[in-house]
Image (cartoon, rainbow, N blue to C red; front, side, top):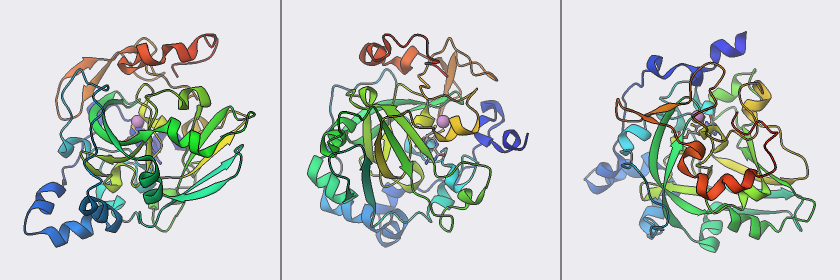
Length: 315
Ligand SMILES: Nc1nc2c(c(=O)[nH]1)N[C@H]1C(S)=C(S)[C@@H](COP(=O)(O)O)O[C@H]1N2
Ligand SMILES: [Mo]
């Protein structure tokens, strides 16, 4: 089947060879090449660095059981299908124009509205959290995200009583994102959560990483992080947040629901149909570590799934 052959992120880890082109932006910013750095990280990002909103204060309630993954590994091994199906999307993602960037809030809310990302950041404020990230392909990383709780965005949106789900939509621009010209994917990328999940403390809106605004390949200028679910739930470069009564059909679910469902909670005991989920390779090391139920966040999130045992919670 055509789709199968082209779905690069399903290549078993052992076959996926990251090519090493890594630009150390921090070194550039600090050094004589400052001007070059400005163009590399984009206008908005550069302005934010200068304005001092990064790094944001760290919220110490979110701790790790492992070391933070150095940026030279996490920043050069990304899934961002809008910019290609390999892990080396960094060069192509330079084409992403992140400023100005407007987020649309619509659907079952008191009053739909649009807000610029910079305004949103000013309004809500930023904090830093250390989170694990577990891709369905069985690799993982640990990163310091900067952002704010998704619950604060929900509060700002004022969903009406009929709203049960939240749906995220990524930008759509075939001229900028060559991957979106690949016709057999159901663009734009969409993802979703229940409102109960969106209200959990761990659900996070991300605008930065490693103490600075998001580099493009991480999903600039605004993305989601849902650390107890497989990584594909964490939609990048979002332009729209909608509140709905019905469960949204999501990107990967739309392609192959037998392998990628709506819930997609991490569970080492439930294998993907084509590989085991029992362990994961930590980016930047050759080591595999055991995968944990709910990616180690069971204490905070298991309660969300009481009464839903009949659902395919881990696919
Ligand atoms: N719009 C969009 N969001 C996306 C993806 C994508 O291809 N497009 N890939 C997902 C997958 S599979 C993973 S693992 C994470 C990767 O995030 P990272 O590159 O910051 O590690 O982004 C998720 N969000
Ligand atoms: Mo992923």
